[in-house]
Image 1 (tube, each protein chain N blue to C red):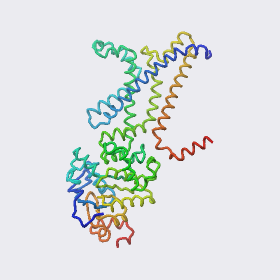
Image 2: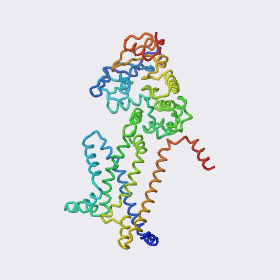
Image 3: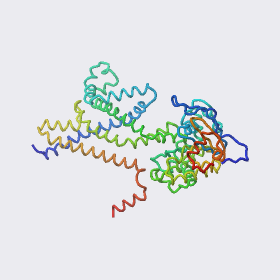
Image 4: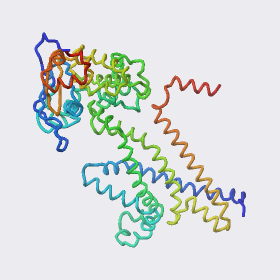
Amino acid sequence: MHFDLSLAIASLPALFHGLMMTICLSIFVLLLGIVFSVPMALARMSKRRSLAWPALVFVIFFRGTPVLVLLYILYFGIAQFAWVRESFFWPLFADPFGCAVIGLALNHVAYMTDVVRGSLLSVPRGIAEASLALGIPERKVFLWVRLPLALRYGIRAYQNEVVGFIKGTAIVSVVTINDLTAVANGIFQETYDPLTPMITAAVMYWIVVNLVRLGFAGLDRWLNRHHAPEPASRTRTRKAAVA
Amino acid sequence: MRDISTPQTIDVSLRDVVKHYGPFQALKGVSLEVAKGETIVICGPSGSGKSTLIRCINQLETHDSGDIVVRGITVDGTPANTRDVRIEVGMVFQQFNLFPHITVLQNCTLALRLLNKGTKRLNEEKAMYYLERVRIAEQAHKYPAQLSGGQQQRVAIARALCMEPPVMLFDEPTSALDPEMINEVLQVMEDLARGGMTMICVTHEMGFARRVADRCVFMADGEIHEIAPAEAFFDAPESPRLRGFLDRILPSTAHS
């Protein structure tokens, strides 16, 4: 058994197609994560029990359920209920992509809620107090002081979550989605060569994950430019490095 | 400092202010009137309620009972009055509490911008004026982390001044500073006091209190034990608690 380069090259178009599915799915769910995790974190931190408890139950339930089980329930289980099949949402649950997005998003949002909550809690209380003392209304303090600072504290935890999430999408092949892993597996079934398509797929995952990592490193540098040495000394080091 | 030739108007008035943290009574009915332009220094052992008292004035803490009136605004915890009083009262904290992610200049203009006051250019001019006054204008485009503690605290003062409040609260403004940086901050505070600002300062800087304060207040266990003009406060303290306190914190010759 060896790595078959010509098979790898011949598989590239199909694998690339699968990769696009993986990326598409990831972007969809990550966007949902950003949209829903902030309100969920706020609900979880709320003093009102009617908000805090449902959010807590949501987090505990969906963090504790394996994504695989969740996907089986959504794709095979829910269709057993006639009222779901007659409901407005049925097209979403009938579609494997819809099920995958919902299943992954429930899990991702549950994790993200605590990432966002932890980041908001690590913003020093005094800085929010100083904003209030200046007469800035609470809502604007949240939007312009606490949230931007929380983003800076949380960006590394978020990067971990995103990288883990992208690789975790490989699980959606169980609901018939042709993502990168499913396509690689298909090529293995056809050619009886497990090594070539899987290694090629692994390289593709590796490239995507590292592009994401580079993107985050750049974002992190830009967001945390206030911790950089002062501009004068920075240009000096850069010139020294060039020379 | 107060101009004693004109009749007094009262800028801040506290009457029987009571505050609990759970079963612990932090303020046991505190009354104090601060005249326009007056500089008040509050001192006392830690846990005596000094910080709680000034934090009640701008409602960073809500008091349980008693009356607080700031320049005609009754501080009663309603959102509208809380907003109004915070515009009238600037505050400087022990830990500076600058916004770390924006420049010194932006620190000074953020509140103006978020409250839709002035234009960008006017606000920046105003910020530069106050940064000039605290003698730090040349650092306007740096980030807080690039400044020393004393410089950060002066920026914090400029940031509060940009809202042009008639009253300023200082909550132990020099307690987190290295000794060599304390004077630059005290000097800025002294300039403000001489410029006619109404100031309430919680501080352990007794030299500053003696030099700048119109009246000094001694608090212990949530109560005011003594209020006196600075000279009498240090040279002829009446209450035994204050005498004991001064004995512990001052060199023995200072108030004999």
